[in-house]
Length: 149
Image (cartoon, rainbow, N blue to C red):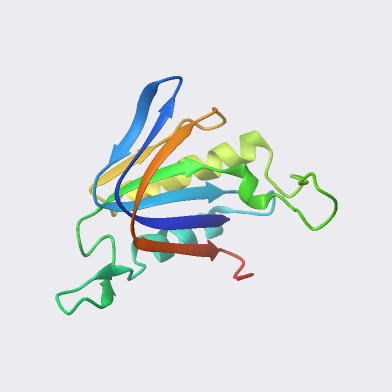
């Protein structure tokens, strides 16, 4: 699994003009799944993302996690995180998981996040979505469950 994690003041996702998910202070996560991913990858990503210390403490040091600040989480599926642009000009998406596998792990990620986070919102898997992000900092982190970067 791969994620682009952004610390936000607010974020929302819309499908066909309807708001599907919206959060205030917290994290906006673009989440991609590859065909090799398992529930073990989900567990790793939930733990890493929700406990990632990228919120400031009273000394203005990045020392607090989403859980520590009682923040909100917006998760949007993003198969293009597995786009391979090394050859030619058109990305290859052969490393992205098929929809049935990706949906299962995406839903698992959401459910496990709800066990730790007070508010978890999401987009609509497979839909064309418009995402508004008010990045705070900006602070943006890249996380890969296979630890490729």
